[in-house]
Each structure stands twice: as structure tokens, then as C-alpha cells.
Image 1 (cartoon, rainbow, N blue to C red):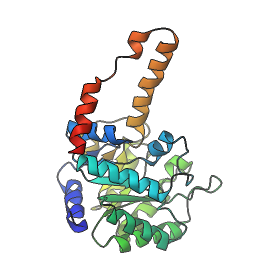
Image 2: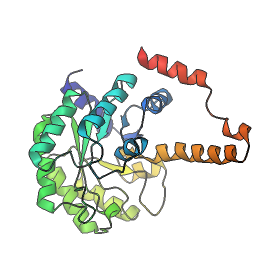
Image 3: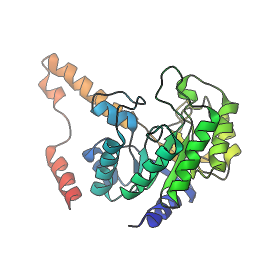
Length: 274
């Protein structure tokens, strides 16, 4: 499917009434499970990918090529639009970000996120102008072929500044970002303020504001157009593994082996191959 058609298909999910819930997969089977459940699009999760490889997120420990190959696999297996959670766009300059966007288009991705993070624990958030220039570079490279999400990580990097967050998201929207995103605003009022400030640009939310997990309907009522889960489905699955490991260590084989029947695993993988 040409890039413009992928863009239009994915963007239409954001602009319809209610928007979409876009869960994040971390491997082929999790992607197939989400597709089989009926979701219309999925995302990657940089944190989940890193964890599966024994690496840390947000430190440039996952390469662009590794993430592209991962996202391409999810798209091939499911046939769904895939949004790539591509950290800071993999590069020091707006031109580097543009090259990443071009590579994502050629890989068949439907969307790509560009954060204002730096990968530097001492100064994790980029300066305002640098962050905006990088989103502008991503938009220029996209040419209507891939949905660009501009994201600020202020709230999850210890910078609880709503005014600066809104300033950044508004600038990303003005630079042409199709979607904007600030993970974990402090409460519903802050989320509504963000939605109002950037309208009509669609807003993504990671699960909910940080103070309370809301329902999908409540988030839609607040004007949210896309709900993602980041690494939280992955950590949900890993909690089950953790509990099974403890049961096994205690000698409880039955509790440690109550997972999905492998016949279903084989069925899903066969469907993905076909």
C-alpha cells in the first residue's frame, strides 16, 4: 500500500468520532493477539523493545535499524497500521530525524513518534527550539505519507510544567505534527487544557492522567483521540511470568503452567505467515 494510502487510513482513525485505542505490541505473537482481538492499529513500544533485549529505554541503546525491523515484522504479520515509538527520532539533528522518517515510510509504517528527549540523563529534555525544529524536520520528510506525532516528555522527566508542555505541543502542532502527546499529565484538568490548547490537532494519551486511570469513554469525553498503552501490556504479561516463576520455585507446577494453550499460539502464527 503506497504511503499516502497508509497515511489516510491511519489518520482517519484519529479524526472519526471516538478516535481509537492503539495498544502497543512487543513481539510477533503479542501483535497477532491484538489483531485477533479486533484492534484496528497497533504501536511499538521503545521501552518494551529495549526490555526484551535486556537494554534500557531512552538511552539510544536500540538502533534505528533494529526498531524498523521490529515494526516491519508487526506490520507484516498483522496487516494493521503500525505506529513506531521512535524515541527522539534517532539522530542529533533535524536532518537525522528526517532520514529516520524517510526510512520509516519505506518500511511501511503508518505513523512515527518524535520525542523531545535527548538520551542524556543529565539534561533529558531538549531545548524548545531544538525540539520544534526536529518535529518540523519530521513533518517535512513525511510528505503526507506517514502520521507524525510530536511528543514532549516533560511530565515523565521530572518537569511538571503544564505551561511549557502546552507551549511545546502547540508549537509541534503549528509545525505540522498530525498528533501531539505528553505522557501522564497530572490530572484530568491538565489533560483537558492540553486538548483545548492544540485543537483541532488530535491528542494521544498514555493510559490516563497520572492521578487516576479513567475509562475509554471518559477519555473520549475529554476530547482524547488516541489512547496508547506504551509498555504496560508488556509489563502486565511479565507480572504473570514473575508470579509463575515464584510458584515454580515453591514447587507449584500447576500454577506455573496455566498459560495459553500452544495450539492457539500455533494457529495465530500460521495465520500471520499466511
